[in-house]
Image (cartoon, rainbow, N blue to C red):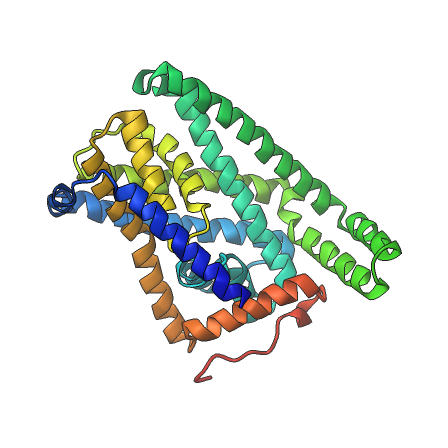
Length: 358
């Protein structure tokens, strides 16, 4: 019942956001804009998106190496694609839990430690986006591209968010360097919690802290951090090519601001970022760069489709090849979330669940 209510509320929010996004658009002009988009730039954008997922996989391998040793590219890439496909197919961002869980099953790893690397990956994403936003606001042509009245809040927001991101990295480093101490701290909760529950939480915390081992290995951590920049440059290139394909003269550095707003947009809990993604992109182009509304709406629709449809199709293909269905993956995601909350702390936390046909 709770899942159905969540899905219904998310769907209703998506409908409201889409209405708001389209309320002033001339749909005829939007369709004309889509038909007139430059195909060569759209193909280039699709290739940039592929590069982003390859770079993401390499970065995940860097984060996993200090925890579990070398991980093969193929299973890491396939589970990355399936996980991002699941973000659009399953509710409550289950793809973020499913991705490390599937890799843990295939490579016989600790699911909790593998999940910790995905949490660290998300923090590195935030750091990379904010670094590019800061470069736009202070180093590149931000002051010349947008009004001073808008530039000041952009700089202030970037600085505040950067402080939060650095704080998260510091907290993860402390947890990674002293996972046993964190586990002991959680174990002390036995005074107010049942001893069995406190012990389970302590084991989970210790294993999770071990999964952040990349933060205490400078070489691997720096490699992962450096890979985060080209990951988001590839996403920026995708956005820039799509935007230019629709005739909007956006400078490449301007995409750094667009990406930051898109991150806010997709954080809105709607299926596949529908509505939130569209409106964030439209606001970025019309408010900050003065693009015509109909062109911005057309580009937003196409950019969202390119960002979600190809990875969803590829993810469904990989699921079918492995004998999975969306329904069975939803069940696995629920079990994985439950395992993370119960956390046995070892490899036995990955249940024996076979895909159909195997």
